[in-house]
Image (tube, rainbow, N blue to C red; front, side, top):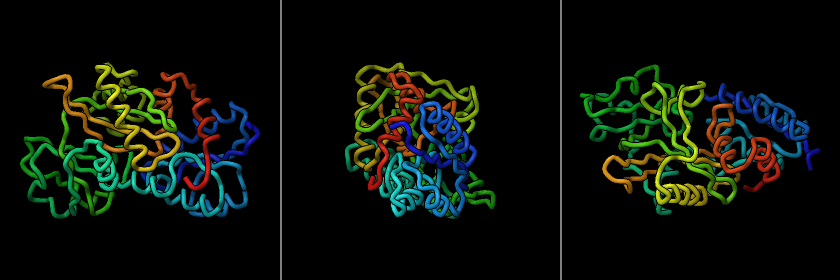
Amino acid sequence: MKSKHVAVLMGGFSSERPVSLSSGKSCADALEAEGYHVTRIDVDRNVGSVLADLKPDVAFNALHGPFGEDGTIQGILEYLGIPYTHSGVLASALAMNKMQAKKIAKAAGVPVAESKIVNRFKVVDKHPMPAPYVVKPVAEGSSFGVVIVKEDRSHPPQIISSAEWRYGDEVMVERYVHGRELTCAVMGDVALGVCEIVPTGHAFYDYDSKYVPGGSKHEIPAKISLNIYQKIQTLALKAHQAIGCRGVSRSDFRYDDRHSENGEIIWLEVNTQPGMTPTSLVPEIAAQAGHSFGELLSWMVEDASCLR
């Protein structure tokens, strides 16, 4: 039923606002090309009133980061009774909290790296775990605030305890996993292809690698053994289902094959609101699986519901 009125929610007020605006524009343009009636909403604090007046058939959630990805906007949409895309309130909140998501994934048999939550002011003078390790905000996306601490660092990175830090006082410290960056998208109950991300001129898959054209190279399908490929797909689907994700998600992994092909596979996190920009991974992975961008978005609109 392509006459559906779809409100594309974009922008918002998180650190990821620019990414969301790019995702939202791409999605709105493609949905219009598919024949949907589209209203573009740059989300602010009165979004509930805007949606109550607009009464769309579906809300396409193209928001990223806190408010849009953590269960908050999902709760507003549930209250208003507007069917929406992606994951529901609980799964969104769990996935946004990296430590809680890891606990659930681990309980489901998904391998994760050792980690702990620490107060950022308590890691000024002493390493919270043996280097190398990674410091991450507990609830941010797009690699904002991620700091890699290498073996040769004599003390923790001072940025974490400085006034410049904008990502909360609690941070997650996680064992650094050497190796290759792999990601796998899930669409409904199907794990799509596995992609290897090779940052170009960057130490890791940071913000610029993700969103600046040419910032990374995407190998789809990843050039890994069939056994590892299928194992990544299985783990991505297992994490998606254990956390209760709906619609489309994307799980990120590290694969250390320095010593053997079997190596070590570590699940890092699940992204319940994957980017939909021109350089984003999920549209590329879906295309490799035979789904055009318009077909992918149409599927998401038709999959939308409340009580997700």
